[in-house]
Image 1 (tube, one colour):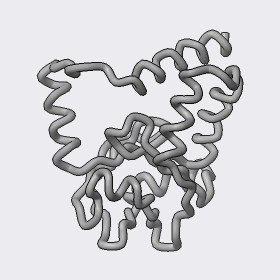
Image 2: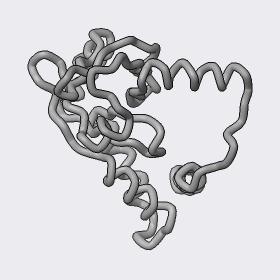
Image 3: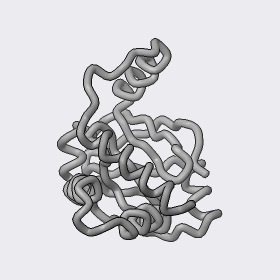
Length: 161
């Protein structure tokens, strides 16, 4: 499982060198060299080893094709998403749409392990997010994607039981 947070930098070409501790997990779990990089909420970048991402897709595949929440989820993750291969220097090329949206080129970033995937944010955004959680502040308004994710999680839980 991915856990903890590591500081890193996205280079001038938009490549992220995966922190060594996370790279060790990738190798130990035999995840291979393929990753899916996306955003499920439009607020942060997610880096998924392809085998873990495929498990997420399988959960959605079990839902009806006309499910509005499923369609919204697929539209967002595929809009931002791209399958990439890690290079021999353990670098991942971030999709241009995400580099531009989050201004990640030549930036100091925080790479946080969230069990099955990594969350990538600017260091400043990560610090602000944690400060908000510590202050127990609540989001001003729920976003449509968050509602869709909750509905999907509830449906998937029912299917698995």
